[in-house]
Image (tube, rainbow, N blue to C red; front, side, top):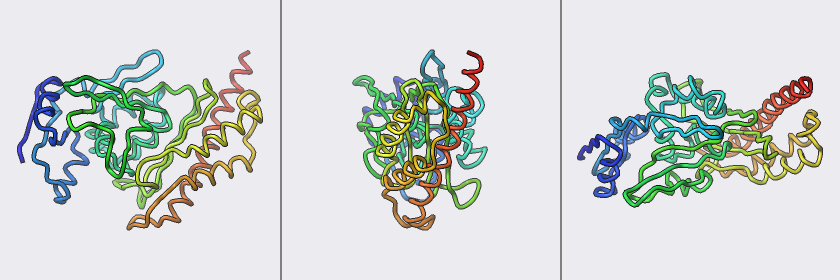
Length: 296
């Protein structure tokens, strides 16, 4: 195995063009596990830790540009108001040591259905900025996952950043694991309310071959909230609406049985998390709605 260590982004793109099979490594929290267990033996490893702008972020008027290697710990510390769902997901990642090393770019590159960041990115509607010597492009996160541990990157492309709209409403994240830390998700669920567009987005992890959205559940809830005037009146969502939303989220899953959990348990757990996160996010929205009305 040969080791490539570019000193700049331009050098990294040139190296990736020359060696398309090179596997990027920054935090190394996924790649090194696969190598240590001999699940992967790449011809080339490309160390990206010398490329400083991968560890930087920029908060704009409407969006956050998050460098691919920004550690989860930095997201938790600095970007909680702008990216609350991703900050909550970052809390569930492994251990403090790994949260100080790993970043969202690694999760996206590995594209494991159990990656902790994916549900939050799907719920927020992120875009992945990728680049090669041929140019750059942005891939909507909905189109990024193409199969089990497969993504939409071309062989000569590298992930440079993720663009995420700043939260305009409450977001939540929930994860089921066999213990409280250092655990791969049995299943996970992200939910984001978008009051400006009066829409709801979801993200489901570890309950299908790829991270997915529960689009039928979103369509149902969007219609129910609009028809009931909930966005304007701030009323409590009825139990029947919450149950139907949860059932549709569970139905969106296509899980497997494995050592961490059965398929039936995963479907059930996703339904429970969907109902709970909807309750939590809507209560937050109602609280903000009442405060706004009072100020008016």
